[in-house]
Length: 324
Image (tube, rainbow, N blue to C red; front, side, top):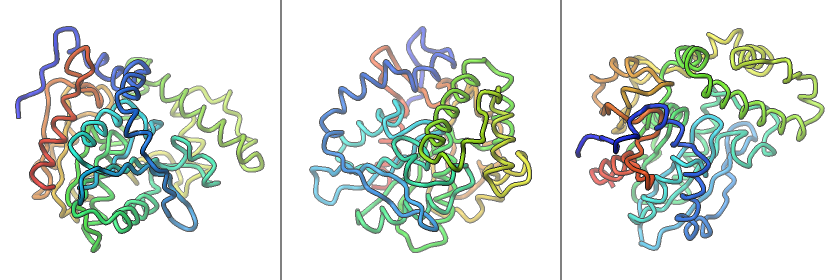
């Protein structure tokens, strides 16, 4: 497959990263995906200890079509631009789709009382396992973006120990070292810190309205940034003693992925402003993981031209041809 080289004017990593989730791109993708989005069915997927996650299943017109399960990034959703773009291409290729929403993302805030945090792995493993067992496709790919890529890698590691028939995994710009990403969000261009702070606060305000007795004591207006928000919620709404311990719980290393046996592919851009690609270097000698680096792409961008064509979609389709 040819290397990704975007058209002139789209090589800046911040332009790539912003376009990945821009409202303009999302609106365009919702228009071109309108037919299959209208055919999608919501599914309530069992998580852990009575929790549930929300998914949207789209059938294929082809019999025995392979299944692609897609997981969005932090504060994204099942209609995020980067996810819709990949899903649209996969549907055109005849795949059936399951777009999985993490807890407290998309339209799922009402489903569970407790707040989302990134160490809630078991409920995602159970939801993915349930989907695979009930949809019963002859082959299944798990595809994640950013934090969703981190979840996809951890889910694949856990399913490597089970009889659940997952065929392959693809992670696009996955979060690897959470503490480093927090530092990059704080010290990098303010647009990223503002974006995630605003979206997280909006999500928490919705949770406060839904479960007044649980979260009304939280004074969001006094919490100025991601670090302060994270420190508060780790202490009050997770089992971890501090933020660094929490970050370590879902960060990935070569040792943590030792049990991963299912063929896995990671696409990473060297100019990602949020994820440092150096943390992927120890994974290069993992027998089940193939890492592909791109000079350009930003964070989950890979936008080729002003028509919003996405090179990562081609990467996903070409990679899956080897397995499904």
